[in-house]
Length: 292
Length: 161
Image (tube, rainbow over all chains, first blue to last red; front, side, top):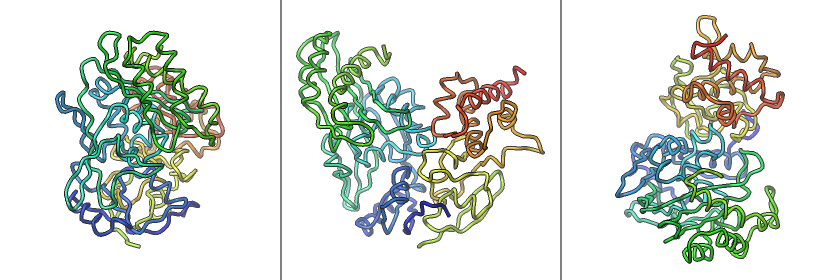
């Protein structure tokens, strides 16, 4: 046995979504759902305990990643980071998500960890979840009493807490089809590449020439949840994107975030560099992913 | 705690076993089946010592995988790479490039190399280093490991040397 011994639990292996949902209906308050497990198993080796773990390993149909120019991108509950990286559609139409997957953790973890797991973890430092926050999306939750859709904008309630109820299974995330002129990008800062981000930022801009028609700007590691920057978004929509406008944006960012001191960085440092990171991620989006 | 009867194909051989719900794949391989070539390092998916390949060339951390979720899957450990007494070209490249010091990370490094080269037979140095993230060596500066991967890439493409 290894030194980090997991607490005891019963592993349940449903063979369909309906069976999984039935199990959640009866065990929901005392159950965790396991897809990739890269967060859950680490938690179980430290201080987390739960009576039942419902694994999606044998549930068919949840591993689909599909793109449709009209309907957008559908990411099933078992789609991994590597599935995202291997998708030419994601790389072309949702560069922010592809860039986040590229630097996400390590190859072994990318082969295992799921995109939906990253969203459900509700970490304020999540990379893929941040890229998806900028791109926008709707999560489909299924329970014994039916399905409902929750916008990502309403999904993260506080640190580690989401709008998912205990009896609900997250089935898929729907990301809208890109609009004409849509550009997106993701950037993060870490000490070494395997670290969690000390600061990350993602944008999705709808451009008409050098004018920005709509903008979603999201930032991580600066509050208890991922946050959007509404003032920055408003400035982006005001005028053509010029060096002066980028400087105004950079100067505004600090007023919209509330970082803390932690093991990865200090509040002071984050406040100082956040504006630069946002400016750079906007430039990255406008340059079509060329980091110059 | 529930127990599960599962079948794993390990290094080409079917193995039936009964595992507790909280048994990791790593513990099942090491303690139940004797594949001690798969190492326990950090236990939290950071060091890569427990790396195994699933269903061919997909690298995963055995320490973060529940054995009972792997029923019916095929696992390759470093002990399954040699054939008829001949080492796998990746293993031989690691030896010939002096890429091994204490050796603890090497089973994982060799399996990761196979995974990298399966996706990308002629990787650049940057691609090799990006691909080796998640496998930590505390002896070396990685330079010889990278050279070993480059050499393995040449050997497997049938050029060089």
